[in-house]
Length: 485
Image (cartoon, rainbow, N blue to C red):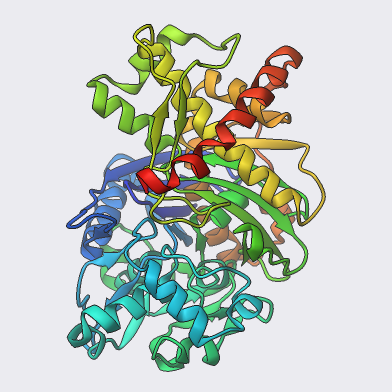
């Protein structure tokens, strides 16, 4: 039996998989965000740990025999979060998260300090990454920066609390701007640009390698054996790729979670920073991936539901499983800024084209289409650097909506597949990395593709209408930038 733990932004998921890769049980615990100032996004690291312990407690209560049989644990987690620890191993302040936009000025400063950053890290300096956050802390909270002994990412902090070991996998480390992504090692040059050294970093492992052993106290708490291996694990998107069997160059998927991610596997380090495309290590040695990111995907629908005071299901139901034409209203989903392709932490959302005849359905459809148009931006950005993407697996909370899946196919002009276990992909991927670490099995034998539940093909008439709507939508960001940023 193998346990996967996904430390997300809005919650923690825990899954149990058996030796055949069958999902046996799952549990979840919510997490809350703090926004103490505009552009800020923080969480208490200890809340991650409490949620993980609570979720596994739930599994141990409902499935005690299966939980006791766990041999390997894998971790996945939200990327980029700066968790600053003092010499006592305790957090010095709340973690600064991936969707925090306070360090825009520090990004420019970091690129001035280290002109070769793009070549080494393979990415632009963006506020979401970890390194600019540390430059901000050094400038605005120097008393905190002076006490920093270690900088960990969210799942690495959870690993530390589960085992006492400080380690990080290559895929998550690649999102810090401190990793030499092509060489898969920490870069002393990049660390020095932020006033840090190798001593501030955890040791590096591949995602399918053993990184630690579960503490005796927790093993006893959950009735497990004394030698439960914890794998290196992966950043949430690389873990989702493992769960989806995306381990062959060319494999691709689109995640509609809190954020939106377009992910493609590559067999080499293929940076494309000019298009704000991320180039990271995959969770398996010898593989990398490219990734486009939007900061508000399913979060955009959640925002609208909150504003209208209705559950998301109630907003979607009247629209049915498909629409015949684009909404007369258009939506920019830049509620928390944007990465690909604009790299603009100050970008803001907008509803454009409102008239007195507009109704709730028009707004809901506009939000779904705005996220789809932003996904098309990402598809175009990745298309500049390699072979075109012809089909995508759709995962994340947004994958529940048949309507959104069809809109995606029509807007993107590619086949979209809804897949089994699409909503727990990262946790499933984590459990499979735990299996690889515990057993030494071959990745191809473990990381199998999930069953496709339904496929959506682009419809010619709707595709043509969306092409026209996309051209208009593309004009909104530059036109509105000066007045709404």
